[in-house]
Structure formats: C-alpha cells, structure tokens
View 1: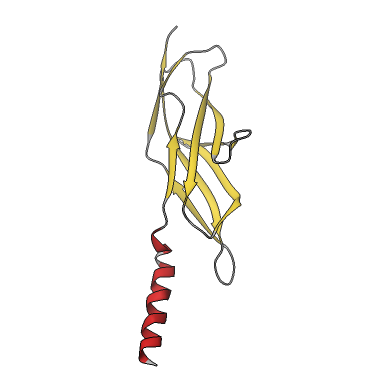
View 2 (view 1 turned 45 degrees about the vertical axis):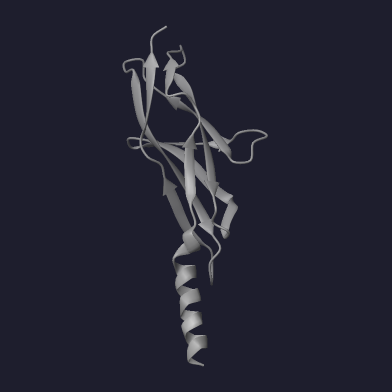
Length: 128
C-alpha cells in the first residue's frame, strides 16, 4: 500500500511538472531587409512543442511590438510555420519585437491556457 501511494505521488508530480516538455519559437525571416514603399516586412516563425496535451487548433501566435500586437497566420502548406507583415515606419530603420504564442492544453477537469514568449528580435531596415 505504501509503495502504491509513493508511486502515485511521483506520477502526479511528474504530470504537474510537465514531464520536461519544451516549446520553441524559431525566427526564420532575415534579420535585415531592404526598405520598401509599403513599409511592411515579412516575418516568419516556426513553432514546435513536445507537449503531448497541446491543442493544436488553439494556437494563436502574434508579434508584440511595444504595445501593439500583430496576429500571425499559418504559412500555406507548412505545418509548424506562421507568418505576418511587420509595419516599420519610414522614419526609423529598426523594429524590436517578440513573438508570443497563446494556446490551450488538455487538463483535468477542463483545458487550461498557456503561452510561450520568444527572446527579443531586431529587424534592421537598410536603404536601397
């Protein structure tokens, strides 16, 4: 009886700790781009997670630029990739941003929200 309780406690602790799951955000777009007339620059990321309980249909990645958030959309024909256009005013030659991915994962008694935040990124704009 005592061993069963000990094993049950260890299994519960492992579940609460997330079993060593990892989620990574990889920036795929160039860090330097040539200025364009529209002032919009493509940003593409790859999001991967080893979390078994993650509900893929709830993934909502977006760029955080200061107080502004820019939603990302799935890259066509790519399973783990997301893209958006980042506006950079003509008056500046750089944009600092982060990527945040919100999602839900299966839990008992109901799914729970979670998120992953990337390291800071810098997009530099060079003149033609």
